[in-house]
Image (cartoon, rainbow, N blue to C red):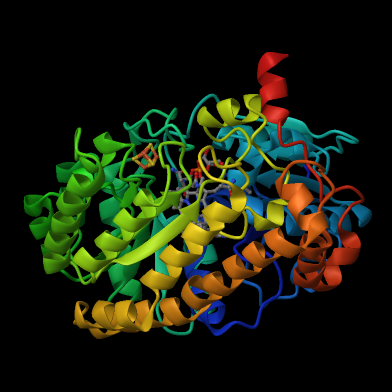
Length: 510
Ligand code: B12
Ligand code: SF4
């Protein structure tokens, strides 16, 4: 007879305890879909599930039953050290542990040191395999991966048992995660989805889920987790339009500029879309994605600004994403061009990411590893802004950080914040822009980048790490991890601050 398992599922949205106001308001709104889907599958197999979305305010030690049989942890790389500590803690109590999510996909070898099972692509069959075996695999865990992304995922109605307690934690805006597609038809070489074929999920499930949400909220807010929302634009719009009266749900989506044409914007507005997050990435590379063709430099800045201003006529909120430090960038010009963009499209919130190579996420990472350009920063800092783990091709570190500080200071100067306010008439988006600018994302990052720059000048241990003279993690970083993990620091396994930054290359050439 099948054994009924006590299963714990943890969705790590935060990387340690926090008291920050923005985290209290927003963290629960960043919950992932897969841990909820997993909960549905495990219960359907007859197991007992305890689910926690960890937003930084819960006690992870007491949130799960004391002696679960199996603990699943879903995590991004930035929370990997926390995940490793939690796994160690539950293993000490006899549990079998499994990891899934972006970190497991990017760093399977490292994850296998601390977990019994490491998930790649995950479908119901892959999960069932682990549920029926549920055994220890130590010292090295086994990798379980479906051949491709799942053909279907449980919808909101089925996931509601796990969504409800999660949105309850969000005091103001309550955002429900949904997904209509996996993979992407574009091939931006730095992206985890550049090699994953585009695949649409069932649109009937979308309509049914939206109808269900209209019975649960007066005005639901839905965040689409599609890597690139709206590739099959008409189909997904029809699914939304069939769910209820026009503009009865607020939507947020990540979409590429090439999909955000004026006719599409009109329809998105009619259907309640309130925020989009397109990637611009760079003024020199990746023209296909933003539909700027061969346009580069200042021509691309003008074209993209006009496009973004057009979007803002239909949508109250837009965040434009840039990657700083791409190989195509050289000298001050790329940064100056972004400053011109901030002037020409004052209503857009600029999201800056430092070039990051997340293990085996993208084919381009092999090139960086081959050229010995990847630095072994502890995972805790790999969130696109607390560390850049690829040595820039055309800048020294100090030069690069000088440009970053200049650009971020310009983008979050009082003048730019005031212009952004003026260009954002709606109250909630205006408030979001100001809070984001004066909190950790704007002012906080300027302070942090300045500290990095100061240490590159004066802290020998720190500089040696950046210059790849040593792989020994500087005390500065160790101290932050220790502080951020709080009481769970004691459970961080020996050696878990370190990882092999070239593991992908080694596995590809073996
Ligand atoms: C939607 C999205 C978001 C949303 C929702 C985040 C969330 N909690 O899910 C928002 C906007 C909030 C977000 C924020 C961030 N994101 Co994001 N995001 C994405 C995006 C576009 C899609 C991910 C997705 O949901 N796909 C759909 C799911 C179903 O598929 P999947 O992710 O491939 O997962 C499969 C398997 O991994 C597995 N699986 C997934 N989770 C789990 C969990 C368990 C327990 C198991 C067993 C299996 C499993 O099953 C899935 C089906 O096969 C990806 C980029 C991309 N193109 O994929 C980036 C991406 C995941 N984000 C990334 C980053 C860096 C961030 C931020 C740190 C950015 C920042 N500086 O703020 C934050 C961190 C947020 C947090 N800690 O929760 C990186 C992650 C790299 C890494 N290794 O950590 C990615 C890959 C983009 C990139 N830079 O390449 N993000
Ligand atoms: S368009 Fe976006 S999701 Fe698609 S490959 Fe490029 S960066 Fe990735």
